[in-house]
Length: 255
Image (cartoon, rainbow, N blue to C red; front, side, top):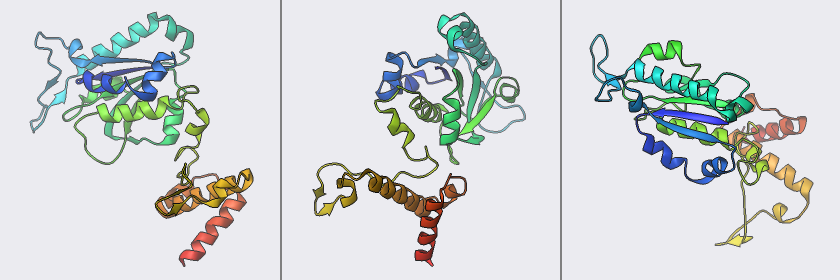
């Protein structure tokens, strides 16, 4: 996968790409990540990337020309690189990180992990000139209903969630599939050694070595935690008859 990030603060993004899963994914060739300083694509000697909004008002707006120049540069390089020629099947998704976008979910992360090339535009100030959204952007994504100083942190959240789903990106791929939300439910409680700590014991079933009992316990605990904390997730989750029966027992206990 190839991911290009367009930002006014490249150092902020580059630092995160040098650690953990993202670093290892790049070293193993699973991820080709490039960070582009938006000011490098400005059209004046002062490297200006923002201006006052038409119609007045406070704040600044990112100018269209630098963003258009950056995306065109990326796409031109994309067509010339052997890595992308060999792997790209569809045009890149151009994603603008904005509070006005669709909410980022695990399901969307899974969809994006199947893409070969993503271009992320990190907004700043009051956002980008509307013509960028009209002409360049294919997706607008938000990581939540709150205000941040810019799109860099949302971009990193998206990158981390997407890249760890690429087979081989993390040490145990199965664990990525069992994380919270990957199965539309919250994760069950997890325990490790020692079996007893500060008077608190790990559940006996997890120490039993009985795989079917462990599976059932984990599934029920996942359902219980989801029921208690995020019940709306149950509306879209795949639930077996056994799951539905257990959920009914939880409802009965709360009546």
